[in-house]
Length: 147
Image (tube, rainbow, N blue to C red; front, side, top):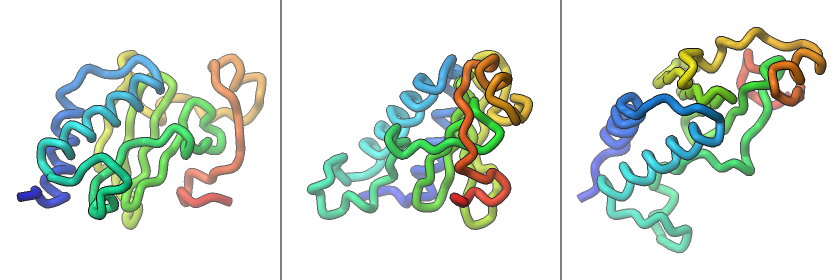
């Protein structure tokens, strides 16, 4: 019997909280995806296979091809899920927000002790380069919607 999505999400957050902080964006994405896949594999009978007729019912992790920039925050990328937005920073920090209310449902600092938004907003390419990030302005953080 599959566990309800709310129980699976709570277990996902519990496991993420218990895990060590990630050191990079790639490590944070790997942590998110491996943890979510493990929870889904253990708590549902839904296969991680698009040909499974119930595949759409399975919670899915961050797809690197669907990461988007966040305006004035070149060290942060976002990924839109069905009901959540996941933000990951270059330091490995993670924040997950519920789309309908913009409520933060999960937050984890990177291994350097900084959160996703602990970087000063960047408004020029020189400062973005100094931070080790690339700048793009195709996203407005205030609304979480593409311009």
